[in-house]
Length: 274
Image (cartoon, rainbow, N blue to C red):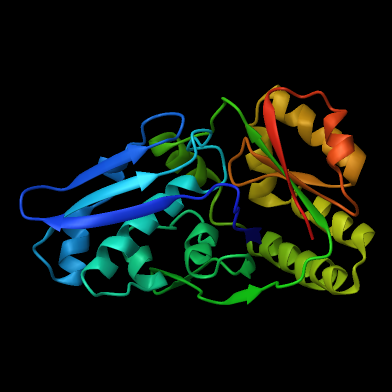
């Protein structure tokens, strides 16, 4: 369950050449290690071309990767899509997955093809083969306010440390998966349709204390844990986005004034209207 953030537009363009691949970044808080994240040789093999790519990425200066809002997924997936499109090829979700995008979480992968607010169902395992489920529910009307708190400096796990973390807690036990499905599809989604914020918030609060979501919260800094407690006290629910430290919450009415009263200078707070 997740959303696209229009406050963080990322622009990607490319040209082709015959000498070498290049990626130039304009904006962001640090240099992104995209030369190793993007496998142009693998892309060339998939789309059957011998061209090299000159890629330019532009993003707001305040953006930094590994904060839990899927920036790396969007950039790497976007580069593959743009380069392939430049060669007349439209890549699919399965194509990007085979190129290595979305193996930890298919939410960001699905949002590349279905921007807005969506519910997606992760990855299926059959005969030892991993594939995206490719089942997406679009939510066109959401009656509640969304709060996104993005850290100004701190980052989460990345690279091998992140891989080791996921390897230690996944796959999720089937009973946990059933509990999450039951809460979301039985409580949260009907509450969205009925505009019942109290039931929605209770359902979200239950989900973020189940399985891997609880593990994601356990590794957060004291500051992030304190912010989670504060938002839960004020709005009834809050959670970390992916591995954090970005935090999200929901509100029945405009929370802007309440957020100002927090006097928290370590996070930038963004409010998404219904």
